[in-house]
Image 1: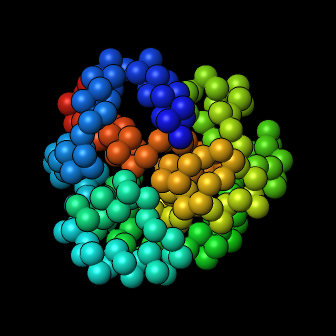
Image 2: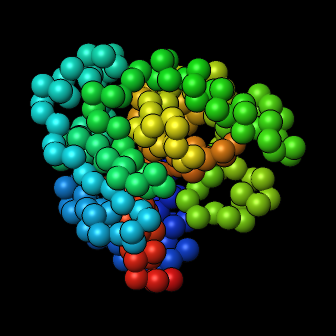
Length: 222
């Protein structure tokens, strides 16, 4: 897990000086501090991207979710929900809504939906055979994606290890790893878009990148 995080951090630092600065500051930051930056980014976006953080989930809601899921939530995921019980989309094209803790379902329940959505996406890409493993790339690695050289692949039989964080109806669908699969540790974020996915070491890293995208849209940073 530590090795993956280092690979991801290095890959992103190569892409952007601004992200490099942010990641250095996040190394020792708690989820609450990352959320503060996320709130600043999402609550005052350009008008077409509008979202709002919900209030914190209670300890009782967390315990009930863990009982429903059948495992203890990864610490980063637990910390997020204790800070904000999801992110509500206030506009249709808001890119990163996050389910409330009460809406989180076991991976085995959502796997058929993820699998079906992936197969339909694969069918639209002639370079990918329907039924192939899910191709997973590092953040911002456009070259590898263009060349079809994923960082790793997740067999369809392991999709039940992924727990949905965002609604299935969205084009970009965020999940977290609930049980180890294909070398990914528990709590790793896998964001599926179409027939491919991007991997983040944890929810802090994913929220950080999303925040940066928002800020770039707001202020035209490059």
